[in-house]
Amino acid sequence: MSQSFVDVAATESPGSAADAARGAAVAATPPGAMAEGIERRENLPYDEFVESYVKKHRPVILKNAFPQWKAFGKWTPEYLKRTVGHRMVVVDGKDVSLGEHIDRCVASTFEKPSAYMREQIIRHVAPELADDLMPFCDYALPNWLRGVYPMVDGLLNRAGEVELFIGGQGSRLLRRRAEIVEGNYDNTYGGTGGEMVAGFADLHYDPTGLPVMLCQVYGRKEWLVFSPDDTPYLYAKGRLSTVPNPDHADLARFPLFAKAKAIRFIQEPGEAAYIPAFWWHATRMLSVSIAVSSTFAHAPHWDTMIEDVVQNFSGGSAARATALRAYLKAAGKVKQLGGRRVGSHPFEEQAVRKVLGPVKRKVRSLVGRA
Ligand SMILES: O=C(O)CCC(=O)C(=O)O
Ligand SMILES: [Fe+2]
Image (cartoon, rainbow, N blue to C red; front, side, top):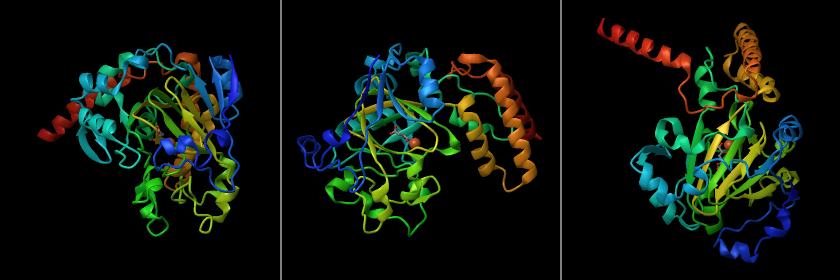
C-alpha cells in the first residue's frame, strides 16, 4: 500500500511543456489560489477507505480499484464500437448511436472538442456490457440507493444506477448549463478563444447530498475540485458555480474566487475517484475517455442525503417533510440489516420491480382499453 500526493503546482504550471502539448489548453491554477493535490491510495483496504475517507467526507483517488473488471483492458473505443456501436444513447439532448458518438470522440481535439456523453444508464443503453463490470467496485458498496422507495423512487433509484461516460480529447463536463440563471452567466465561455474551448466548465456538486465513485476504464481525465469549505468563494447558484472558466477565473469579476483552493489532478485508467457529497468538481478529457460511475450511499451518507431530499422534495409541506424523513430513516435501518453486499448486483432488475412491472403494464392496458 502506498500513499502519495500529486504536487499539482509542479506538474501543471502554466506555459509548461505539458501545456504546450495540450495545444491551447492552458492548465493554469486559478490565480491567487493555492493548488493542492489529492490523496492517492493503492490497494486501500475497504475498512480504511470507510474510516478515513467516507466517514470524514474526504475525496481520494483509489488506485487498482476494480482489477477484477473485464472491462479494464478490454474496453477501447474500437471494442465498444464493434460490440455496442449500434446502441442508441443521448448526447447533449440528441439521440445518436454509440458508434457515431465514439467516432466523434476519436476525432476530437482540444481545439475542436466533441460533446461529452454522460450519465447513460448501462442497464438500459447497453446491458450486454454489465458482465464486464462484475463483480462491481467494492468501494462503492453497500449501496442503499437501489430498492423501491415510494415517494422518492425515481430520485433515489435513478441515483443508484451505474452509468457510462464517454468523451474525446478536450470534451468537458457541461453538466447543468440549463440551470444557470440567465444574465448571471457568461455564455461565451465556450467561445472561440483556444484555451476557453478546452477549459473546464460547469463547476458543480452532485444532487441529493450524495457522493459518487467515478471509475476510469480507459483514457485520462483532468479534474478540478474544491472543498465545501470554499463554497463562499465560488459564486454558487444552487449546486452550480457561476464562475465561467474556473481554471481561468476573471478575478476582477469574481474576486472572492482567489480565496478558493483548487485541487487539481489527472485520473488515470484503473483509478476510481471518490468525490464526497457537496464537493465541487469539474472535469475535462485529455484523451478519449471511457468511465463508469456509481452514485452510492450507506450509513455515513444517509442522514445528509435525507436532509437534502427533504429540503428539495417536500414541497414546503411540514407534514410531508416529517413523513419523508421518518420513512427514509427507517428504510436505512432495513438496508443496514443487509450488510456489506447490499446493492452488489446493480445490473439486475430488482425482485419487487419484476412483479410490479407487469402488474403496472396490465393495469395501464386495462385502463387504456376502458
Ligand atoms: O466523469 C466526469 O467527467 C464527471 C461527471 C460528473 O461530475 C457529473 O456527471 O456530475
Ligand atoms: Fe458531478
